[in-house]
Image (cartoon, rainbow, N blue to C red; front, top):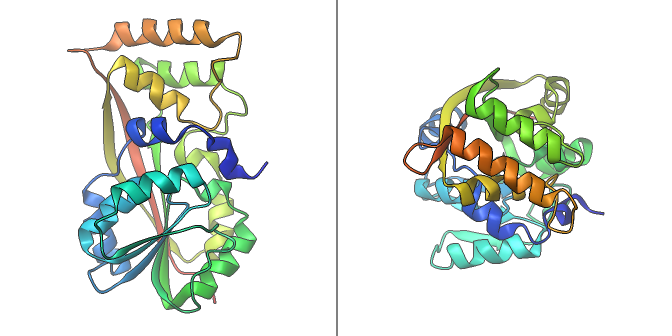
Length: 252
């Protein structure tokens, strides 16, 4: 099964209940990657366009590259009136973009699904000399108690093939090898407020979540509701994140 098929029928939950990226990320990308209205950016593995919608605030020329048809359709609907945005069917290993055409490649919450060797070759092909690769994850902040701890505990209890939250789904060694050591790491505080429906949707948007035909589904729903009631305030819980940002260059 291609990795993008793991998100079959998850595009609605993904769009509604995944955390957005903090506004401070735009300033960081302007300073460290040269993001501006004059740059051409390939957002690879763009999904439903959660990172893309932030990037478009810079007025850059944006190319959203996504293999999952359902998720592309969401992006097409969202960005229909964005003249500087193009939605492209493609993968990290075969974007279909032109040689030496991009100033920046961004990847939000998706690098761990790529073949890193083939993606590195492809990014090197489409990037201009000196172009930047930006890998980003919203990573749930680790805790030994509280909402974050109990949410992650439930995720581990009920998930298939759980690979870790955010950047923990890969390794620093893999990232160092990908960049050849030529990168800097940044962290930005982030958070997400969710209703009970949102908390369940956040879990169900993940590739590793169980589905309604699983015999544990009602037990899962019950345990999530119990945890929500324990930590909710005014009908919402808060999940805290760190937005992990890696910015660097790769040898062409």
